[in-house]
Image (cartoon, rainbow over all chains, first blue to last red; front, side, top):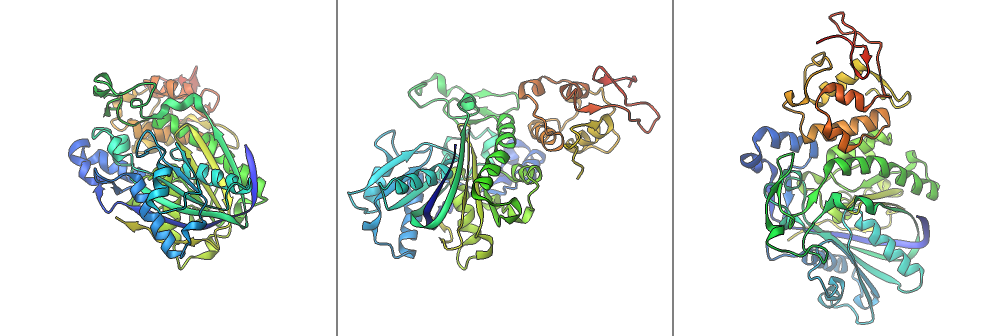
Length: 350
Length: 107
């Protein structure tokens, strides 16, 4: 699926992080000092942000959105659409976007929609917002994207415990002078490789789903916890991401060398280094900011932009930006955009 | 960094060097018939690095199931049967020629 939308603009981006962080080195007692050092060296993550028990990702998104509205001196009544992308809704229902309409004091004359997607979620959110605007259904959309899955990770699972961080973001999308080209791919046959097996209609929580199991690599988890098959994810990422990016470059008429910034999902330093090698990118064009936050899932791209390019922006790195998210689904998406006129606001810690 | 993807192949010695790098071993250590369990760093990190090495250097994808079933270095070579070519020699004069995916000389 390759498509372009003209006259669409990303007007502003903001992000919010939990103040609370956990040092990855502190896991030495559980996983061994040598092992932890190797994981840190490969992942590039020294600390992960984790929400306290009473905080939901929607709370982080509210903070980001309030910050965005204040910075933009936004007339909230002008927002006629809200899109919330997360794997961690406040409730199974109603949709969290509906609750956020109320919390953010937005007009009642507004469309509110939730999207359940993980690491490709920011691309999906932009795609959804662009379609709603281009179809004439909305003029100005508040896109809230984030995940707080740290509470869902078993303490004995080192594949995720030292990798995953929590974050929320807010992005304002509206009609404008820009053009965005999207490519999204889906492989549902691999759904089991990144999943929280229990808690949905297919496999409700039960005493059986709470039984701990140890996998062949020594990681402990239950079906109530998140599971990620790192091997299959690596194969998927290296197989699909380069082609997705090539497709949006072709659709946009951009050459790889003309791209200022490849804002890729901050999965880990190792994965981004491999993609850089595979696609023969200039390392300077592939920023990495996961060291102090962890892999923030669907919020990792807006968090990267917020952390690295907030005002005063280095505008020269934002004229031609390729964003790509990949993971849960399994799914992958990429989009091209000019962010040189986007108001990018530094992250807030809460 | 050497990329073999244009030819899609590497010699056995070059393959062992890539594996030595992944396993953080001294060069010219691996001879080809070692059991993978004997390498204390043949863990999940190494396997992911192996998957990536094969893709980046040889433009090939390994089946995860097949990779996890490998017990020896020669099993890994067999996994990449069409990509690992022979005609290379160890420093000790023994050939690293491969026969049916396994070292032709005894270790």
